Image (cartoon, rainbow, N blue to C red; front, side):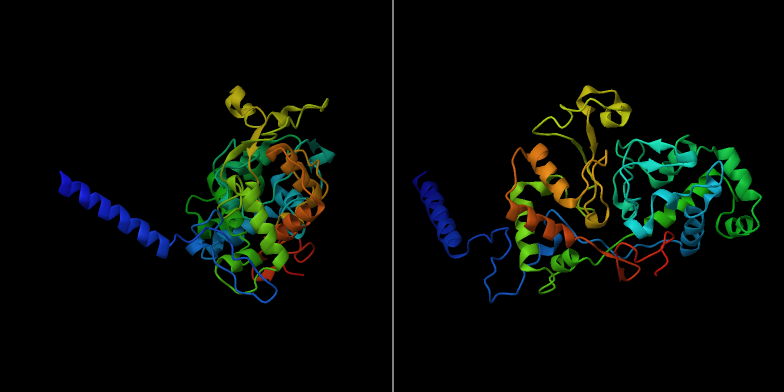
Length: 351
């Protein structure tokens, strides 16, 4: 027994000695002085945020067909509205408005989420009512305030088109139907990734990819706890969260509508009232206004609102500035060109 106890004492002493000489590396960014420029990568992407992969294998013929459909108003009842009407690739993949506007000026009282990187989302729509991009296609087509159409009408119009039948025949053996139309559009949407942001390059270890302000903003982003919800490749888009985790965001609203109920509309569970899919922060500097209700006109407004209602505190002006600086580093590239307002037309063609 004494021999066993002696072995335990020796082992503990060795462990203490080892950890004093070889301490565990802290999971923080290097503090930069005015002469330091080397940045520490996120431990082979094991941190909360990982770079967007630019190695997405897609059927390019189907992507091209989906791109045509995405920009074609043939999907709408009166041929006046396309997917690109609301998801404008020249406006960060959204429409730059608080709400979506459909046929005959119909207003859907919910903000249009960006279509860029939508393939990274774990579910689609703010309330997560469908899981795939293919399922998502039906929503706008059948919504009377958006496209106001239906599948039999859409299929008939596409079959009567001069070019679509041959294009579908080349890629889809079953021809033109709900499944093939939805898949082609979804395949195009999956191609709308924006890798190679300054922050992605930082994660991959590129020296000086971020400015000192952006590095400090990222450190603050982690310290505040923003990464608990905004994480992964999309820096969001992979969980649901209550809008107003610390303070009641809806307390002073007297104009609540069905969209403010969030995931409750899907599950009927009181726990899900005011819970929404956490939006991606990729290219967030380009997608104002913000939140499901489009209530934050600027990125600065959005940052202050999030910290107030989700974290229960207020930011100092310098903290706000640093966070916004970091968020600007999340703007990526589309087809090799840095995304910016007006850098592409609505169909994604470089201007």
